[in-house]
Image (cartoon, rainbow, N blue to C red; front, side, top):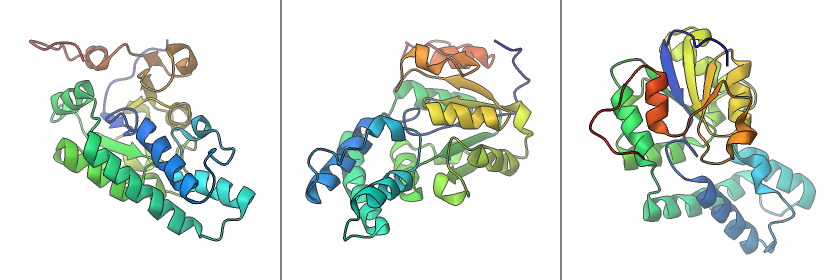
Length: 225
């Protein structure tokens, strides 16, 4: 593992890092596709889209199947289903919420998510974490989604911190690739993929308390996530 850079800011991914939302995304996609007459998932491998934007999946679906419904309407249908599931299940990672609150005030914090802004807003409202982040970006607000580095580079600019001093917390392969392409130090959490699949990260942490320790923050008086 390379020498860890001095921490200037910490940037969090959201889906699979703050919230166990990937199963809900897949469920909402499958229910929407079934409503369109594709109960088998339309031949799409959802794992291929983990860490990427909804728009990419729906664009691929539309290119292959030519549905009579525009992509924007498909995205809206899926989003509505997902938000209902999120409100019902509230699948927050307690360790992640603890980590964000612990780091708040120590360094500038950013949120860089491939999700749409309404989904980000729902998660931040549900977790109460909005005030902890100095920069919040959606993948829809940059020219290219992960694995391109655009969202991380723009978040760093908003935070006023050079990319090489930004630490990124990620769970997905496209997210790790994007952060590495941005020249940032990447810590992966094995929430979505097994540890062996995350080897391109600079470090794979066992849990959120391990991330805190990497940052030089020693958890005290708390139980493991």
